[in-house]
Image (cartoon, rainbow, N blue to C red; front, side, top):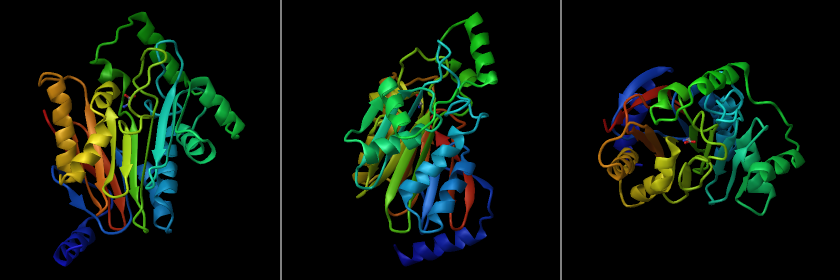
Length: 319
Ligand code: GLY
């Protein structure tokens, strides 16, 4: 790294207290290991940082981080406590990817609390990249995961209230998704990158619907030469542009993380004739430790943790 930039980054790092909130429309840079995640997932980052700060791997770190909201019943868009689909079933999507382009993914998985860990088992203990539905559940149980009821009383009440007046406009975004998917990216002490993504998807979705989060290239992409990206928001829009792969490819062609996220957002907005009500946010981290995010609508944020700071950054948005 450029020495002047190193010193300036170190000085800034020393001045930033833990827990700082900031607003950023440009790419920032860190030195050393770092973890970033969509939305206010600072607790997830802490779990990841525990591993990174002890010279652990980025892959272990992102899995540990993603498991935090998966286990949190107050998080209604990830794992246990996630809002169900229209039939009252909680169905989960997740994936994980390392610096060697090795990946594992599960979709439409039911009754298993930690889909990200099942995805990791798919990566490590199966000849495949992706398992779905009943096959994914059977695989998980053979791997020792236990069957659990993931529908909390609160989530059931929300579903029962929705059933009295069932509708599914995109504007249900605010009502049925309190913060959406976690995408989490890490760079470890060895300079290796990994990422994970996990979600219960859009609340009150059609039974069988799968979003972007378990799709390598849509919800998550990692390229050891360039960097990593993750997406959050309306998965259908992210899939249409292969969003996370697009962000990484834009970085390959010279864009900074924020510029790449912005161009991917612009592509989605353009696909929709220049106007949109739904939200999509991207997050990107390159090999040099530069990171950034960008979203369609205001309100998107991302959390960062490195050796100097723990911070929640409000992202810039197209609208
Ligand atoms: N981004 C999460 C989903 O659409 O399922």
